[in-house]
Length: 554
Ligand code: FAD
Image (cartoon, rainbow, N blue to C red; front, side, top):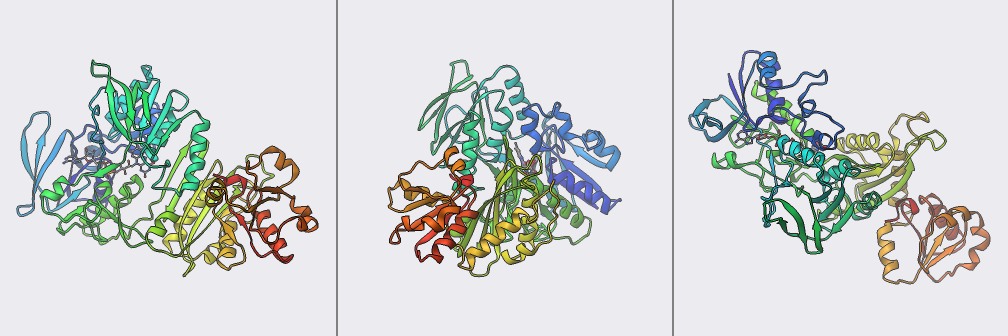
């Protein structure tokens, strides 16, 4: 059997390696137009930042063997053609026309099963100056090497176009070496991953590290010095000097081969595949960044180009081209990244996405320590859970903070994958010892908070909504029930604030007006909720608290 694979980074080599294990006799060939194979694209920011010293480390196995063409040939008996581009698929004769980019020689490679793992290409905004020296898009390892070299040679003023996952990872790794400006078209960074009140917390961390954020602004052009080198980025919000510009404005699936071969594309523009990762031609499979996936919550097609997904696709395809029948049900849009001291994760639907899709949404924002507060090294995290108020099914989670986000995120992935309700999440037998968690894990706590809200016991409001109402000058009492020490340390600067510590609330409640709305808060919102119940027991009828307290104040 001849298995031909186009694309040699994540999905392609994974499919090849799995196919070899499942079918020792197959003839397997990978065609890759670039010069590097099977590298960890996700590691590029860390190579640029110098935490990964040599680019070869991104291409090595955990025991340090570099996965180059010789490795694939000698160890796996897989034939690799680098520097070779697939130009066209002849589905009738089952061949692919390829060109050796060095010699310009072409030939037709036959296949029984073809795998498209052609990946994605960075978006190149149609603005003047994109071709200047010093402007990069981080589309491949060659560009990552050039960016690192530019920084090592003294590029200090770095403008990153795009405040998404890649732009922020780059700001993180270059933050101590360069002056960073991020230009983002949307009003917030990470706007496709997080709800705005959480993006604002990430922006605070970035600004705290000296990163200049230019939000809600478009780049109009990139200007050069007359000799072809970049000097300035001109945006709708002003001009910014630059020695180096990295455009991280998203990626598009590479679908030219598939389109020209008449394979069906999906509504996102990426290649449409079934659960076996077969295209509309059953002998052609596709996976990785070039295909669209089904969202496991919404059931809709989505384009979520991630290395994690590409590798899982590769395994399923490898099985199936070797005669298996493995399936890939879909994705949750899970992502995780680190921005300076903040870990940021999300999975499932954000509240904004869920609302757009028409769900009857309820959510809760819950700060908590990641391990016992008395154990050295305990750090805060903030969990936002999103659920369908009609069915109580979980829809998604966003988790961020300096603490252990990763553990909670992956528990949420498991919960969402199994279709759990918020009530089921609260019963999970999660691990606890003080160095790892709290007796009630932050996730259990967040689930219980959301259950209280869904049950109508806790009346809570999103902190961003409260902030907007304060800034609009609305008349309500903002009741701070923290301790005097906390009040002296940090306070919310609005005339609406009335300060009564929780311990004094029963005694001093008569100072509060019964005919005005009261919104309570504390450090995290636990005492806020207690205050709500105290005031209600005393006959107050219009009391709520805002979620997240000072810890999550946007
Ligand atoms: P690609 O990596 O795009 O590889 C496709 C290959 O196909 C390319 O080498 C291309 O040259 C080749 N090709 C295309 N067309 C042809 C043709 N006609 N002929 C021959 N060859 C062809 N994902 C995560 O999950 N976590 C992360 O932390 C993360 N961080 C990232 C950081 C950066 C800076 C970048 C750029 C990406 C990151 N990603 C991350 C995304 C991840 O790298 C991609 O999802 C993954 O590389 C996709 O793999 P792929 O094999 O589908 O496609």
